[in-house]
Length: 208
Image (cartoon, rainbow, N blue to C red):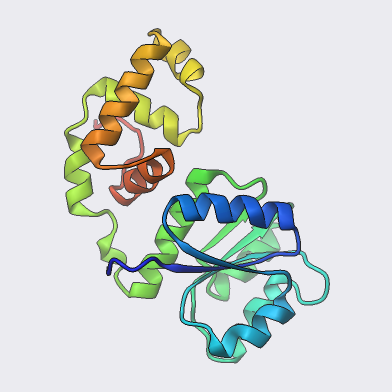
C-alpha cells in the first residue's frame, strides 16, 4: 500500500456521531470528508477520488442501503462500512451481499472501526494478503507477555486502572508497559497503536 492517507467519506445526518468518527479516523491518519445525506454524497460522487464510505443505515430520504444500491447501479465498487443502531440480521445480510465490507452497531467501538477500515483499505488496494503486515507482526512478536497484556487491554478500550486490576499490578506499571509497547511497535499515540496492532494481526490471544 502507498503512504498517502486513505480517503474516507462519512455519510450520516447525525453530526455528533460524524464528529466522533472524524476524530477517531483523523487520529489514525485518514483523510476524512463528511456528508449529511445520501443525496449530497451521490451528487458529489462523480467528482470524488476513490475512497472508503462509512454510512449510517437509517437516514431521512436515501438510507444507507439505498445509497449502496445507487452506487452499485452506477458502477461504484468502493468499499462501504454500514453503521446501525439496530443490528437487524436481514439488513446486515443484504448489505454484505451487496458488497459492504462491514456492518457495525452503534456506538461504534474504536477497534471495530479500525478493523473495518483495514478491510476497506485492502479491498481498495486489491491486496487482501497485505494484512497482517509482516514487519508489524515481527514488531509485536518482540513484546513481552506483560506488554502484550497491556496492549490487549488497550484494544479492549480498558483504562489503565482496569488493566492494572485485571493483571494485579500497579497503574504506573501498566503505563510503563503501554509506553514500551508503543515504542516497540512504532506508534506515536494510542489511536495509532491500536491501528498498527490491528495491521499486525494482533488479537491479544496467547499463542497456543
